[in-house]
Image (cartoon, rainbow, N blue to C red; front, top):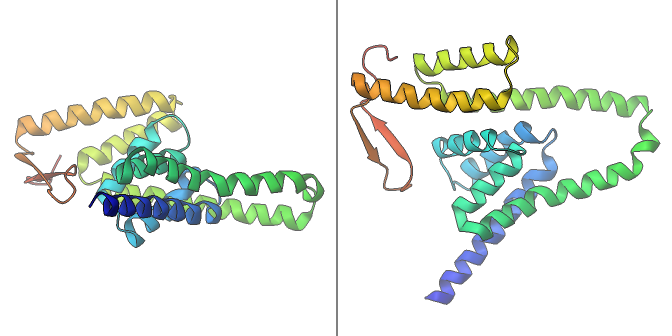
Length: 215
């Protein structure tokens, strides 16, 4: 029985490694541009996480120091198979890009002034903007679901764009705002009870959430 368990664990580690090896080299722009590819592989193809769990992973990854792509890989790998899963995910995410950037760095000085290469980079930049926008849209689908979360988004954008508040302060303030909003909703009866989804063991679902138009 123990041997079979070990074989299953080793296979999962290999699958994690292969999945992130596949994601990394095809994703231009890094960071948030990786999110659609990660979500497609982890949620759509492998079905290791559901959309709500993936949204939580991305929220934590975006608020933690470091790149969101590496952070997400670390969290996902750990969620699937502990430290060994994290190591496999991080190696899979970093190794291909390291090799590609290393090779490009060797030859960059030779084609840096090439008009066609510069034009190609301009096109890639536009594609990266589209990927980041798509990632924001996917996160918004599970994060913005009532008036309070929508107004939190508006206030956050105002702080970032017009008042130039440092992102770290906005993230911390957003965390406190979320706690405050949850307490207010619970006090007013907008959240009546909390149950645990036995399938995910850790995924919390809020029932009877909406009353009227929601706040």
